Length: 227
Image (cartoon, rainbow, N blue to C red):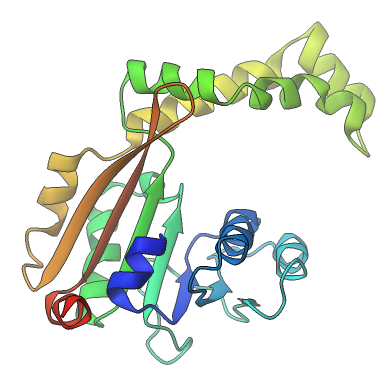
């Protein structure tokens, strides 16, 4: 993301499908810790969780704002939010090809940069390596009944006695991996936007795992930045 900001000179980033907003908050913290250029971030969602978004904003209120309106990632109202860049963290795979193309085309039609991050490429081997690199996730799942503030008895029952929660988590993780777009698929989605420069990277981390960073920006803007 730091390289992306350096090349595009992103100033204001609209975070689409923010969910809790914590991924964006983590990114802001990392940028500050590494003395990196830090855009302003606007958290948004089609169905915003106001309490969770506010909690994320409170971690760094100078750098993080919250959209006061519902935001459709496939058709962002041009006058609702002033921004030059859009971002999606672990969310792009939720959209089928037609809507995924609409997200990218809407960016290109309005001249916005876009940065997309996914946790791993599609496939059993990448999924297995990701699992090895995130051992705290199953531990958090197992300890959740003891740490939760509500429904402790129910969560204990459905975690240990009738393990619906672990099975649902595993199923959701597998389906998520199956839906992540590959490079050929992303190339197909963007072929109608030749005036944009598209870049795909797989970034290694952990025990052989890789994450995906895919971004696009108007060619003229990127070229001017690189001069």
